[in-house]
Length: 213
Ligand SMILES: [Zn+2]
Image (cartoon, rainbow, N blue to C red; front, side, top):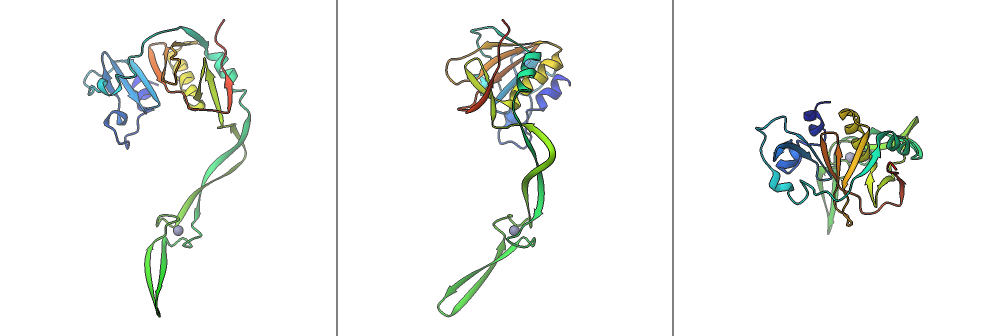
C-alpha cells in the first residue's frame, strides 16, 4: 500500500467537509482524516490544498511521552478478544408495502374517506430493506470490545489500522508519543507515519495493551 492509498483509505468522498473528502497538505506533510483519526505522511504531492488550519487544534501534536508497543504483542492481544457469530447484510422484501414501495394512507372526516398514496415510510419507497442476519459458521471479534492503550480506550477498527500501518511501514514498533490526560486525541509515530487517534467516551468491555518493558 502506498502512502497515498493509506490516506485515501480514511477519506470519504461523499462527506460534507472538504477536508474529510480527500487528502490535503499540512506543512511539509500530506494528511487525511475522518475526524476520528488523522493520518500524516511525508508529502508525496505538494500541490494538494492546504487545510492545516482545519486541524491545527489537533495536528501537529506535541510530545509528552514515548511508550513503545510491539506490533506482534498488539496482534496477540487483539486475538484474545472473544469471538462472536459474524453477521451479514441481507436484502429482503419490505413487508409493510409487500415490496411495492408505495402505501396508502386513509383519512376519515365525517362520512368521507380520503386516500393518499405515498412512498412507504418503512423502506423509504425502496420496496426492500437491509437487515443483519447471522452468517452461519463464521465468527468475528466481538465488536463490543475496545482496546485500552495507556489510560484511554480506542475502537478495535482503528487499532487494527495502526497495526496495518506498522506492517506497511515495515516496523515492529508503534510509539505512543502524545498521551493527554483528558480524553483528547493521542499521538502515535509508526515509521514515517504520524497518527492522531481519538479515544472513545466509555467502553465496558475492553482488552489492555501492555507496552514493551
Ligand atoms: Zn416498504
